[in-house]
Image (cartoon, rainbow, N blue to C red):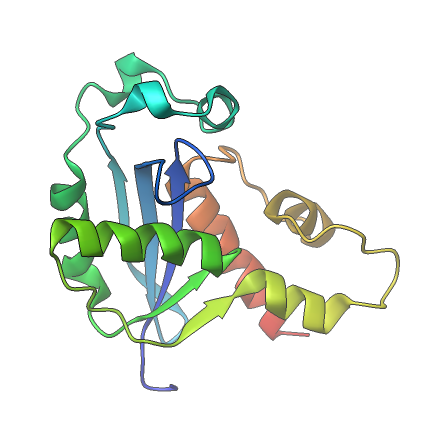
Length: 174
């Protein structure tokens, strides 16, 4: 795994169910040898916005005006595939993001070209911090506060992907 690039990914969705809800934003930070070599951000045009969870849309700052130039899901995934070849996906709650992405790849007929290994910063944080001090929450927000990581646009995909990368670096130094 040492020879692989890492791709820190965050997605924003219209709800929590990957079979019913949609990806509306993808953010990624590609890292090689500890250096950012590429960033990717893309708003995705939702097809069934009427099936969205209003709370999710509020959290993700969705509004029609900001999504006017959004691309289709296949186009967004193709752009992600251009930078993700054989990279190890890292996410905060990787199961959530990878479920949505795997389902999207399946439904679009595109082949996920990322490495099969995945890393989860929640799991890493729990392993390193559990039982230390008064850590009660392992949300990205709580961990950013704990490690003094600025995440100016929380719940926007690229900002959260960047924050996840910063968190990963801090956790690896422990």
